[in-house]
Image (cartoon, rainbow, N blue to C red; front, side, top):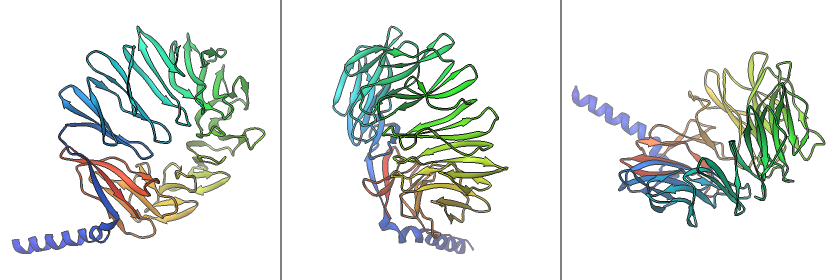
Length: 413
């Protein structure tokens, strides 16, 4: 009887392994760190980079970026990458000095504490801040700007010539652009720089919210501004706003339009996605008690559960997950039944035009063929991070660890 159980278990194991053997040629793995130094943290950007922080000496840390490591520091921050993936920067502190660490080396900073790191959208200009005696200094174009009571992120124009940030002034706020402050507002939401170097932002006066470009309002008045995004080139932006009636609308801003384009009214709208280059948006909306995905002027049926829409890296496809009895993925208004349960908010990656998706379990990365039930799996590990599609290498990638060793799993189809 015991022998029969062992035989059945062995046969079951063979059956489970068959799909992975059949697709073994599609996946590979690379050991990035051998585990000699205890691993503290790790991750990757959206392009081609990976990073890790180790603790070679107790209480002291080292940063690895794509296999190249820094000196040992008493304190280290997670690296920030430029949008094209060619540059990165982090802060580090040893027992004596504080440094700005980049792909080019270390630069000593005089401050007592770290601030923020940001790159211009064209990736050429690095802006950072630090604190000294409680005062924040922003280093921009080799000049130091005092950022008094800054709140929120630092925005950098495409060229890197201009920076902007919101600052608190009593119970009101201003937006500061290269050291010059705006008039006082009750609240401000920065959106980003337009391609003419004018700052795009939403500002509240009394109960009214308006969208501004520079000093000029360009929109109607709204009860609230819920979400806002701008593309990398600064020629398309989108906003989700609530009207005074309580209905919610989208606002599309583009050089292609004489004035902002206002979308249809919905009971609720959220999860705004913006095409990387074209004046196209997608978002999730509630309409007559059911969720839909609004894609430009189209309304796509969601599901009992509906995820948020996304665009592929090149903008060629819009996709989202949904679930009824079974879960599905909708790509450019075409529905594919996944024949399995899936958390619609779970991170996943999509290669444009491939009819595949990739996601991570607790133990590996799965490449799923959405027009069949076939799945491709990578190496089994102890812990996994969410995947990305690396178009430069034309492969899905995810980081994971086993026994303190760091691996990059890769699947290509």
